[in-house]
Amino acid sequence: MEFITQLLADLSNFLWGWPMIILLLGTHLYLTVILRFPQRKLFTAIRLSVKRDVNATGDVSQFGALATALAATIGTGNIIGVATAVALGGPGAVLWCWLTGVFGMSTKYAEGLLAIKYRVRRPDGKMLGGPMYALERGLGLKWLAVLFAVFTAIAAFGIGNTVQANAISTMASQTYGISPYLTGAVVCALTAAVVLGGVKSIARVCAALVPFMSLFYVLGCIYILIVNSPHLWPALKLIVQSAFTPQAAGGGFIGTTVIIAARYGIARGLFSNESGLGSAPIVAAAAQTRNPVRQALVSSTGTFWDTVVICALTGLVIVSSIIAYPDISSNDGAMLTKMAFSKIPIVGTPLLTVGLLTFAFSTILGWCYYGESAMDYLKGQRWKQGYRYAYIIAVFVGSVANLAVVWNLADCMNALMAIPNLLSLLLLSGVLVKETKKYLWSNCLDHDMEDIIDKQ
Image (cartoon, rainbow, N blue to C red):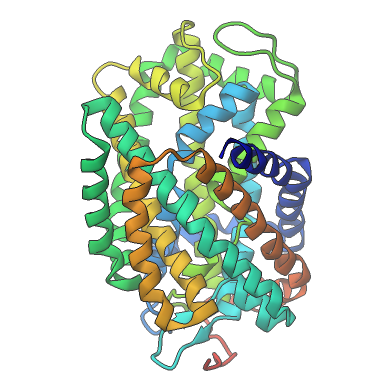
């Protein structure tokens, strides 16, 4: 077991090394340029995300699809992941993480566009889409589509399920002394109550849960920043300076170079918002939208909320808290987060606890839909229900098991998902430009999609 754990750790480090970071960030920059900075349409995108497109075809509202994608994306990585970047890459990692989110909006836009462009309608009327359909229908690469679906179905059990369940049980045990077995049983039952209802049930719960948990966490972070206000400007200056100049050790921070700050900041940003991973377009394909670009814009707001807002606030809280309390120091992201939030009277610990619990549970719900959609592509409807039951059982297993192997396996599967997805984005960039020109650049966002959705 130790050999397997180390082998997977080495493979994960290789897959998420500089080649992957360059590929992902390069794709973000390339799509930003050729699509003429779709980030500038942010306010239009936000408006569309809360406006129901009643005459459009799809299974869930655009907001429901966005909420489900955000539920899967906003997880422990937004809190512990950012702290890990600061612990290993210094305060400058926060700026690199933020910049990754800004440019990653273009990639999330492109993923959403292709999801609608190449989605299919099943005989029962349900919509299916995602990178596997773009690879098969847009590029004719059926074998690569199958590989993506396999990686997704496996990854859902890791980063989307057992890892999140373990985070919930660990937090409940350490904070309140609750048995992991009891926590696992409760979370397992709650998961079953939601996911057995299918995508509409998942979207309905996520649409209610995501705004609450995000608003609660954001307001809590703002309160902490007000408490830390004397140290807020020094924290901002330190973040910017450390992103472009070497940082000497001291004041609770480790010594870092610009390269290290960039590496950990970019990697955590990419990992937290999942832009380029290929997961979010799976649920985007179910959205009720009249043309691909409307949903593409809505999808892009997911990266904005996840990284540009939530990760940035988390980073500011942690850096300002370390400056305010120099005794805070740790190379472990989870411990650094706990120490930083615990210094804030009254709201610090409850905010961290509720934030981690709700973020982790919402991730379990969102990734269930990703995994079962991948299984639907591979084996059809007859396997999907069995996948749901296995997914529910895995929640309990994750709550009580040691997950060193699962963590590394999940990291590997996520990287292997990203490669075929990025390939589809780059090879279909001409389609992206054409559709963007047709609807966005020509101010035709209210026009219906001319292409008829094929029946599968």
